Length: 117
Figure 1 (cartoon, one colour):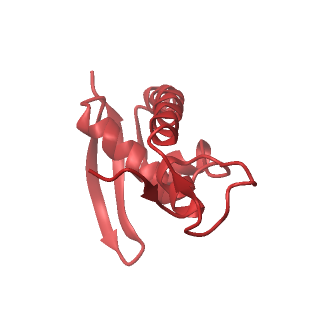
Figure 2 (cartoon, rainbow, N blue to C red):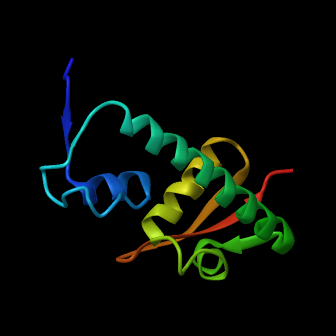
Figure 3 (tube, rainbow, N blue to C red):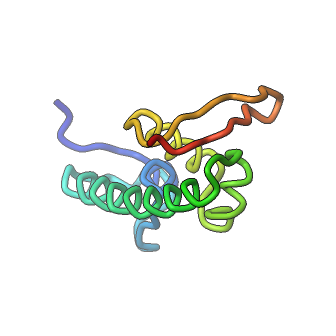
């Protein structure tokens, strides 16, 4: 097992979707012990729960909705589309929503999401 984990600050921020203090160096100097990673994971779980509630409410209100439209109505200013689609994937895996792919293109896939009853 490794004692210390050396990762870049931006890599961690991307992975867990949160901001680290400016004092943490922005390159591979950010040497993090095991104490910080669980804290970031805990914050990520809390954030996921918040996003999940908002998305479920929006999906139930519309019945069924395209993923791009759902993104634009909810978290377009807050999340990257990649992070948003990971949240949708997780909701599908948990059985909260159904997803049906309607098109695949250069920009990725567009699908319709509907709440499971």
